[in-house]
Length: 274
Image (cartoon, rainbow, N blue to C red; front, top):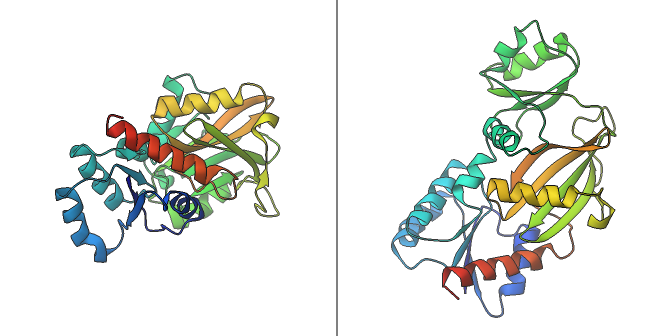
């Protein structure tokens, strides 16, 4: 089988571990959707024989354009460009989750943070996030109007979503899914008051509250994702989803590279009709 990684980081531990498992019997390649050096290769890839499966671990505009072009030729892409892009728009994410009956944080969209700062009806504390998820985007707890005004000096023109801050333990449950495998960990919330996020602590899926694994698998079905992450907080004894990510890193989880290798081969065989 020929497996192609769409990523600027083929050395990422998850991808490198998967590639090592497949290397003896299969061909693993990579395409960097952010590198001008690889632009000529795009033309060859789009015109020549397709790989059996493409793994889309990049969320840039160039990566999505490339993935869509491959899909138009009939390629199998995991996750699809459409599903990946949906998880970058927190407004669309919340609308789909709520429409499907998932316990997702109540989300309000504002055209800009500056516009949000002019509202007099805000109830604090609240959480302000960039509408479009990306590296180094805005995610902040806001307790006062003064704090919001400070954010406005840097993020004034940023499209944002607003969510009520839910009191919780200060720990996020990080759940990751690769096909039918669920991995879990505890991590301090980036909204925690002090001390930084610290290490990610292992968490056995069997130690999760009843129903959480089924909930996370339902997210994959609703969002058409094969590889994804779900951040959940315990809000008064009930799960509350605060974020969904397409193809996260899933670092340090034993079995994750082998699960990804199995998924890639299964998708490749399905694409061949076998």
